Structure formats: C-alpha cells, structure tokens
Image (cartoon, rainbow, N blue to C red; front, side):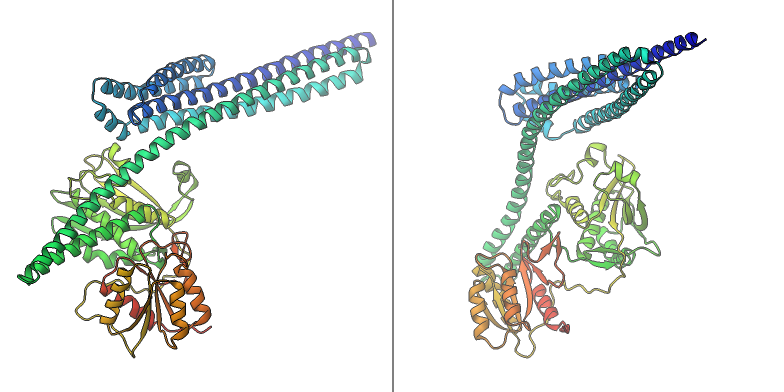
Length: 615
C-alpha cells in the first residue's frame, strides 16, 4: 500500500510539474510575441514618419533627394504593414485593427502619390497648395489613433502575460518544493527541472533586454524624424502667419498714409475734405490696432483684467447692441439661464468675443435666419475630458451662439480657429475673429467647441470655469470720443515716462490739453531724478518695456521713495512684472497702446479719483 501511495505521489509530482512547466513555456512565448508586435508597431511608425518627411521635404523644401527617401520609406511601410498583419492574424481584435491600419495608410499615401504626380507634371504650386490645405490630416490622425490603440492593447496583453508567467513560475517553484518534501527520492530530479526553469527565465530576461534596447533605438530614430517634420511645419505656419499680417497691415497703412497725405494737401484749401481724410486715417489706424489685439489674443498674450461676473446679465446688457449690429433680417433672441454660476473673465474681451461670433453668424445667414445667444450651467466629466485632452473636468458656464445659417463642412470646421483662415471674400474679413475668441477663452482657462454641419447651421460653445466667489460690481473705463473729456482738478501734476520720443510727446500734449501740469522723461533714471527734485507728483504714467530700467522697476523705486504717487502703466505689449499667467497682476492699472485722447482722459481721471486704501 505504501508503495502504491509513493508511486501515486511520484506520478502526481511528475504530471503537475509537466503541466506547470508547459504553461510557463506558453506564457513566455506569448510575452516574446507581444514584444515582437510592439517592436513592429514602432518600426511602422518610423517608416510612416519617413514617408511624411519625404513628402514635405520634396514638396515644401523643393529638395529632389527626398523623392527616393519617400519611395523607400513607402515600400518599407507596406512591408511593415504586411508583416504586422501576419503576426497578429491569430488575434481577431488586433487583426481587424491591422487591416484598418493598412487601409488607412494606403488612403493617406494616395494623397502623397497624387501630389507627386502633380509636381512631376509641372503643377508644383498646386501640389504645395494641396499639402498646405492638410485635407489629409483627419486620415493621418486616424492612422495614428489606430497605432496608439494597438500599442495600448499589446501593452495590456504584455502585462497580463508577464503576470501569468510570474504566477506559473511561482506555482512551479511551490510545487517542486512540496514534491521534494514528500518524495526525497525525486529531489535531485526536481532540482534539475528547477535549474532548467531558471535557465528559461534567464533566456526570457535576455530577450526582454534586447527588445527594450531595440525599442529605445527605434524611438530615438522616430524622434529625429518627427523633429525634422515639426520644423518644416513650423516654418510653413510662420510663413502663412507673417504673410497674412503683412497683407492686412500693408492695406491699413496704405489707408493711413494715403489719407494723411491727402489731408495735408487739402488742409488749406478744403478743410471739410481734409477732415474726411483724417477720419479715414483714424479708421485705418483703429483697424490696425484691432488686428494687433487679435494677434495677442490668439497668441494668449493679451493682458486680461478679469472680474467675477454673471454671463446672463452680460448678454442681457449686450442684447440691444448685438441686435443693432446684426440688423433686422435676422431673428435675434437671447436665452439667459436663471441661477447661472459666476465666472471670472475679462468683461471687455468677452463682449468682443460675443460680438465677433454674432457677426460671423449674421454673415452666414445671407437670406436671414435665427440667431440665439444662450447660457447654461454644465458639468464636463472625465469621459468628456478623455476625448478633449485640453479640458479639465469640473463645473463650467456655457455661452452658446447658435445660428440657422449655411453651416460648415468638416474640413472648414477643423480649421476654423487657424489665424488668417477665412471663407469670406477678399476684404470681408481678416480671418482672426475666431482665433481671437479661441485665444481669449483658452487664456481664461476655458474651452471652445464648434458644432456645425453643411446646411444645418452652427453652434459655437464657450466653456468658462465656474467662479466660487460672488459677482462684483465693475465699471468700464473704456470710452469713445466725447465732446467734453474729464480733465485736471486742483493743478494736478503728471510725470510721463517713455523712451519713444513721439509717443511721449503725444501723451504730454494730450494731457496738457486736458489741463494737467505735465513733466516728462525718456527713461527711469531721469524720472527718478525729477521725482527727487519735485515736491509734488500726483500720477506716474510710464511705459513698461524700456531700455535700462523697465517700467515695473521704476514703479518699485517710486513706491519706495514716494508711496503717495499713483501709478498707471501704458504698453503695447505688457510683459513680466505687470502680467502673470496672462492676467494683470492685482492692483495694476494699464492703459493699452494705442489709445485715443478720450481713453487717456478717462483712465487718468479714474486712477486719480480712486480712494486711497488705508494700510
């Protein structure tokens, strides 16, 4: 009986060890296969990047050497796709993804082949225009998304197989120990099998190390190719941006220079006509100022002065202005939500954004239609944030401008926020309206989304973060031309500091016309010398960016010397010292350049009239 029990135990030990050893072998094979698929995907990405680099290098840079590089990369890409399809054919999920990836890249490279055919037939400019339209971007993004999904699936599979291999190794070790304790006669044999298992684990580790080294090499090669491609795309974008700026600024300067030249010629002969030309020059200059403001907003460099506000009250207050702006052909309605959460935003920039959106909506309804501006409280959850990587989950106030106009096809909707991109006729728009809206909302910590289909109208949603504080009463100092401007009281003294002589003299002349006693200096050191020798100065009006001592450094010195002197900055491009994260630093007063005399008068009077806050 004991003999039979011993034989049964020996048989069970042998059978269990065999089963566990075969399971461990299968797990190791699966791990190696997963690593091979990951390596294949990385190699495929590198080949794909090389094809795009060859296309850009030939069509944009005009270098014919990139043609051969493209052809080699394309053939290599097709080879990698075929190999990938073969390696994952046993997996239904990855096999379907590989087939989709093959079709996707062939569709994408069909665009390239067509552009090369254009270039070979002499239509090089048409080929370059085609690549700049980036109509193939959705296909490229889809290809990349498929690869990301396959890599994620392989990473999950690798983790599962590695855990399984570890478990099998652990079970095998435990089983061998049990068998060794129960049947001493098989201890030596069990030891040999344990050593064999250790050798297999060592081989698997070596394979993992080699595969990891290859992955790092592939990643380095891919990063180099991507960096070259990004540089070409960046230079192309800069060329498009500077071309648009030069075109619009030259038009505006033509209006300003031509109008002033005509006004100078007719000033003595026909004062009325001269005044008309001066008004035209002013209009051109204001358009140029608006363009720079839009550029700063797009680049998220526009200094914001946010305050807590109720967006529903804002659209109620703006409704009459918007109704007059869009005209009588459009049925204009506002639908402000009750109990709306407060937001923290720059009132002037938000008003400008809403006017921009409403004007765009009006232009999309040539034969008239319906335009609705509404507000709502919304919660953007984690699921929404996953599909919109630039969004943080949380509470938002949504402001929607919805029209019943022509709508946008997908290719137009995808480019709607690009600077100088417009579907309007020449001279009907700068292409910066939506870029300004986008820049302002992003700088305010929000999110913009467009819903639109051709023939079904458009809805633009502005999501601004909920503000936990209370809505504060605020007054706007921006003003247009007035017959009577607020002027000096009690012989007030203002010190103007600006390194640009003509700008400084303009401010000096305007302030003197308003009745102020004005001192002026070209820089910080000269200004400090004046303050030390002047018993009374009521206001320091200083530029921000100046050689030597900056405006913020001058303000610190003046604060230490004469804390009673009020401070007002003026700047065309505010920088560090008065702006933090795109917002004006608390307590900082700014007069943006360029400014009208009315704006200067109102802002100076506001600062001088502010009550001194006790320390």
